[in-house]
Length: 397
Image 1 (cartoon, rainbow, N blue to C red):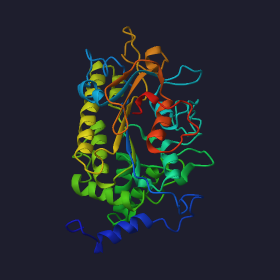
Image 2 (cartoon, rainbow, N blue to C red):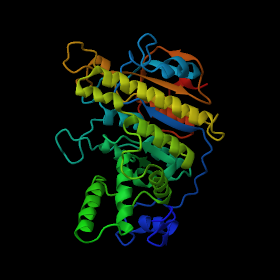
Image 3 (spheres, rainbow, N blue to C red):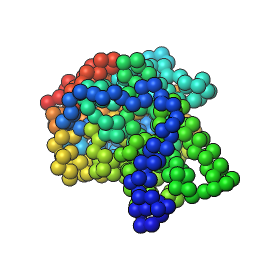
Image 4 (cartoon, rainbow, N blue to C red):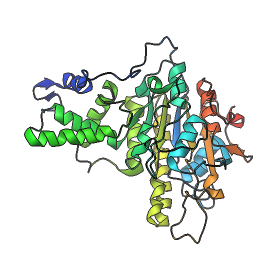
């Protein structure tokens, strides 16, 4: 490849189209391409969901005397409406963990999720009711590359919460994903198409690609993520290379991917699934508190990016909400667990700010995580009809 424009003598754009179309002779999945729609264009507001994830307690986040998230606690809270006493419902079979909490947020419905392959401790879940991404795309003419989940490298199972199995929604209205796993898959597919390897090495690389593609258990992206995201990854490769030793890692990677997505893909609805506080499972409390600080800094960067962008500024609502809480048991050998269903693991918060959201409001009364989806629908102009929680009316100005 020479100066980023040619690959083995093939113009770059032609080469990229070849990657996208490389599997065109394979049988198409039923419903894999949405039918042409006469739905209206979406004008806004845009919504950015920040999963303040990995499970966090209120004490280290929204408590002014103990916070490790000063930007969230001392600056952002005054720009919007803070729900201090939001909870995950204490119902039989409802777990307080990352994948489940993410699906509670995007569907607005509690469910007893089981691994789709029946694996012990597996976390391959499928939502039975639509996600907010599906509602938006069915109501409005929004392409899938403008409804995005930005996902962490250690949570590959969450790559595929992009659509439900609901018969009226599903794959035709899916969102798309940015993650290190997606970049690795793009890169391997790209290098194979460019003829980088031959013989036994080529066969080895093809097996590696097949293994990466098999992570998509529903086989929805056999041919890649489409031209817009192929171009996105090509720009990422030109900037950071392909070693993985240059680009950010952990939640800092998610911040960088999100900022680039905002600038290059112009999403209407985006969810960034932060998760670094979960490193507390290694047993060191500072892994947890440092993870919170990293998310807080990432949140500051995202807000600054939106505030500096003429199209997003004044037309973007942020929804900041944890996937789950954490245990407060001081006698546990590993601090701040979340799998045991303790009261504090159900205790979270939510902060909404942006146009149409009440400023400087603090709501002390009980609120429920299942209300997030309905509230996003209210903000964006669709009805999340299968969501269980009511709209968070105190936030609507």
